[in-house]
Length: 144
Image (tube, rainbow, N blue to C red; front, side, top):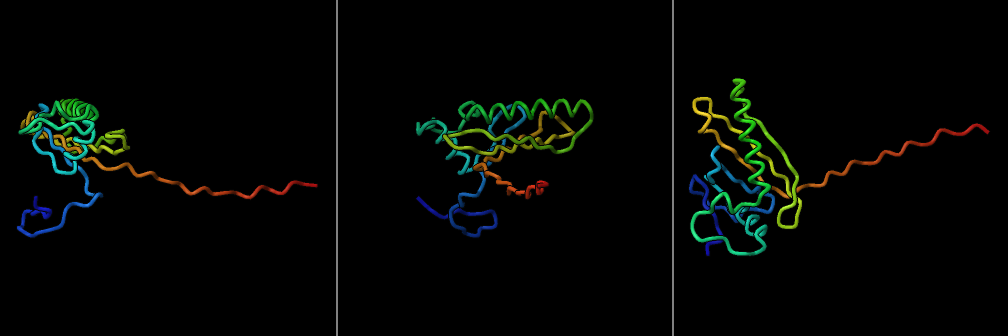
């Protein structure tokens, strides 16, 4: 197996880092158009280590959190299209996949020429806990 990966300009780079997001691209009809290696690994983990069917992966074999996010975004694309709003938009979810918290960022990419050609792009990354510093205010002195 080759542990190097090509990029479009022909350069060679090392394997993707853990911080590289998984990317899944759907058609508005729910057909899986693209899934990168990172997303594929998460999908395999979510399947409990079971092997996925040989050949192209069907959207139906993806975790329900991805399918649900796709459906929500398609519904929003349709609603926004009715209002003439063709702007790109984002929906974010923190879910548990494969026993770990991940952030799903779904992007609705409407196509004003044909809403059926709209796309849904979902990125998958480990959720980062955000810690807010605790500011301790001194107590006001009590009058004695």
